[in-house]
Image (cartoon, rainbow, N blue to C red; front, side, top):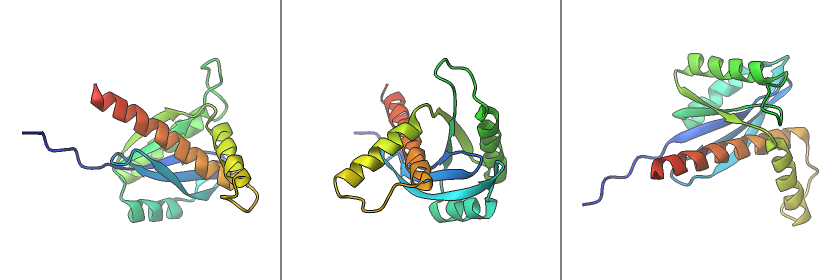
Length: 153
């Protein structure tokens, strides 16, 4: 008799920045993520009331936070701030936070958005907020792929 499948885990992904934080939602059932918004951040302090609303609306079990590193694996000026944001999420909501290396996620997000515009799937110009939200989805999908790979072995 086959073992019962694991229930889907809903996750919120965050592309942390000092001015904006991109947010994406995804789940382990589909293994996919989609951008759901961008919130303001003032000198690194996020708009917690908006994050509260996203957490209430989506009911995530886990948060995935992009942590920036340089190409040589050294920390960037934002590495410590992104990790502190993840710690604050964990303390505020009592949920697990999974850090994900965010190198090149914004570049991949820009490429995806430009391609969508070139294909006619997107009619308006690509803004910084759009890139941040798609980068959060890129990070979350990266975590979902890795998690799926780990659970299969």
